[in-house]
Image (cartoon, rainbow, N blue to C red; front, top):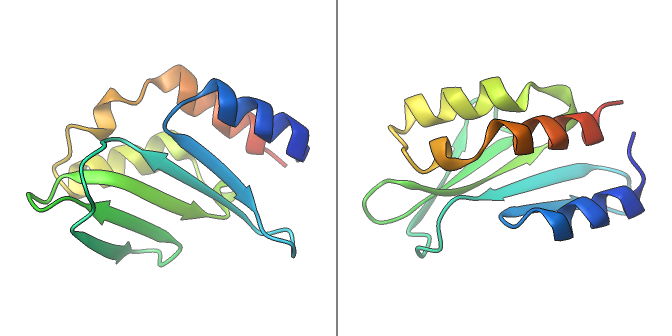
Amino acid sequence: MASRRDVIALTHEMSGVEINWSPDGALAVYFRFSDKPVAKTVEWNPSDIIVDLDKAGEVVGLELLNPQEVSLKKLLRQIAKKFHSDSIKTFETPRIEKIQELLAV
């Protein structure tokens, strides 16, 4: 798994992405797709995905717990489809692949 130093470097390099470790070693990634205020937060199946929506229902951001256990590219496509979100499509594939590689076990 990536070191905290690697993650800090990546986070500074990529605006719109925040990666956090808890003291017990759990990992979470937050993707911000818009600067609009969050009007509603929903858990998405599986329950380790939290989606923030604006008042129009557009995805503002999402938090993934244990992101190293999923395909980020596939998951983001599923969420974009489920929530009819164009904002997620603006997140470039190379950024997703770089994050996935960094989080690989």
